[in-house]
Amino acid sequence: MRPIAFISALLCCLLLPAAAHAAGPRRTDLPIDVDAASSEIDTKNNQLLFRDVTITQGDVQVRAQQANATGLDFENSEWVFRGDVRIKVDGGSLSSDEARVSFAQNRISRAVITGSPAAFEQTLENGDQARGRAGTIEYDFSDSTVRLRQDAYLTDGHNDIRGETLVYSIADQRVLANAEEQGSERVHITINPRSVEEAQKKQEEQKKEEAKTPPPGAAPDGER
Image 1 (cartoon, rainbow, N blue to C red):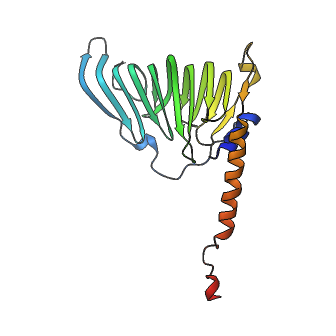
Image 2 (image 1 turned 180 degrees about the vertical axis):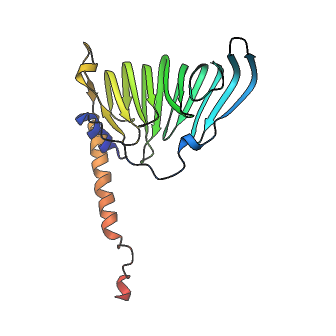
Image 3 (image 1 turned 135 degrees about the vertical axis):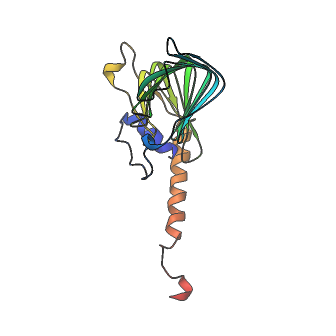
């Protein structure tokens, strides 16, 4: 995503429907792998404790120094991760001091991370980094949206948006800031004029290059 597109998203504050993903195996069909340095199982109380743990399902991964769970039932359970929590999701990553991860129907369905602050980042199509931070970040795996609450902040490295609650679509790289979720706060956007000019210039140069490129199947000038 070009910087100018991210800027437009900040100004419009629109969250568009998530783009369709390429067809592939459903995550519910993929195995859930639990890897840990050590584990303690309390069968009487159905309590599990893992240290230096990594849980992986497809391209989703959760890592932490410690995890507590009530059994290995992934049909409907909640795990609590603590200590240097790192969550890898489709197109981005989250980090925090603590995370509560919900499993439903044999897949990771939702993660709520808290920290001082909790953080999110995504590499944009142009190579820049979109970053966000807040007191609490909720990630919904079904539609790849990140909800940042409590002093929320998002940036594409050039331009910033702040509010009490911001919702970011990883798939569309779009931002939603609903007025009713801001409480007494207001949404504040900082636009760097230089970055806008640079983005526009870059887009113009790219259009010129595309105009020079013949369409697929077209014969070179010398062969016409």
